[in-house]
Length: 371
Image 1 (cartoon, one colour):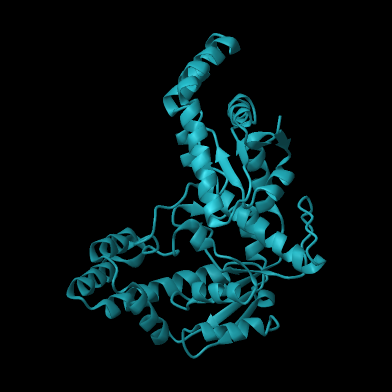
Image 2 (cartoon, rainbow, N blue to C red; image 1 turned 120 degrees about the vertical axis):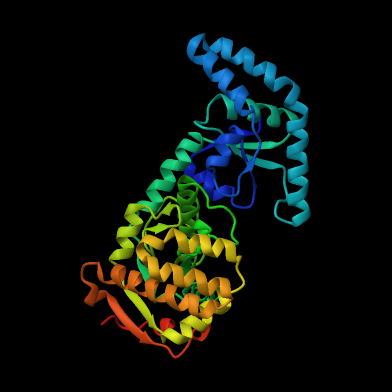
């Protein structure tokens, strides 16, 4: 037998580049899963429901017999799918062996059944002890840790996302919350982007991102010696964009949000006209019908007259003047959120910038002293 059960810390340590399989039902996987996992369901959604009902209403043995009826015809297709997935990883140079990592909901019968089959066929199998439930507990713990954050602030159109990317390229630790949420943070934020993940999936993505940053920081501070179980954080801070707690339909986890609100803010003070020009270029080619829908969604806060004017300008093709109205609204909205926090004077450092540019990264890397 080459089957091994691993704790969550050892599982995460060993499987970053391996083939990770989620054997729960398609609906469970679609709702949320461990990032990087491939769906390999033991049962369909309907089959899972039938087996679960039998388990509760009849007996464990009855449920197993029904499960075997479903499992039997799928054994060969399941093995062949794993073979193909491993072949792809080998072709990409990611994986060089036949090891597979898998989990179900609690690390019980479903993962045991699939692990038995794959082990029997000759794969080296490693199972997450406690299953996805253990992963979720880990993710919530990771997100609740008090990190050393540094926030990039600035009114809408300041190019904050581009600066995060530039910081990451310089080797800094970065969490791009908007990228994880598939949303740019305004009423227009999801236009042209994929659907947002579920709240639970967003939390998993955030935890995985933070975990990878922790591993990177520890490697740098200990010459490659990684302690997966330790949450001790080196001195290097994480750069995050100053956000509202809600990004589209997603909420930043409360503990992480509170840490953000107590962290230093490096506010890029960029002239209004420069930001307007940047936004006109950035959003000017978006679908006008969707843009009008976005304006209508904020109409109560924008006001009836301003909403009518913005939509009229958009219809005329005068995107710049439409955005001028919207930018004034978002400036007021952001300013309210900026000043609605404790100890702002001890956290805020304003940085005057002539234009929207990734060259503004120089002011952040100089690590200015917070006023």
